[in-house]
Image 1 (spheres, rainbow, N blue to C red):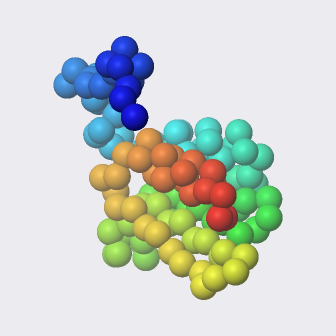
Image 2: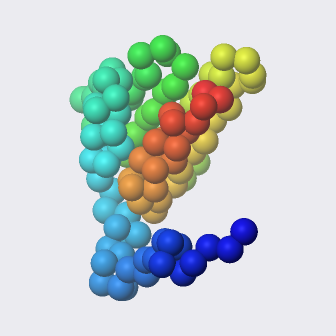
Length: 115
């Protein structure tokens, strides 16, 4: 099959000045906006940690900037998943992982047909 060049998508290469999102700003906003938009329960603690659970209870997301145990392990984000037909698993992200990357991970995970 031959595809003509005009039908192929253009390659997008953002300029370096448009890549500021690649640097973590230690803000949970992009993830919280995603979870809030999905209708997940979001609870913040007096210590400024945030915990969220999916409506079906199979996903947990924690933003743990003030959790001493998390800092000992060099993490700020914790995602726990209990698949309907598999073993539970955990994914953790360190303090320099941009929140946009965590939000992208969650969006892909949630959109997965096998979830």
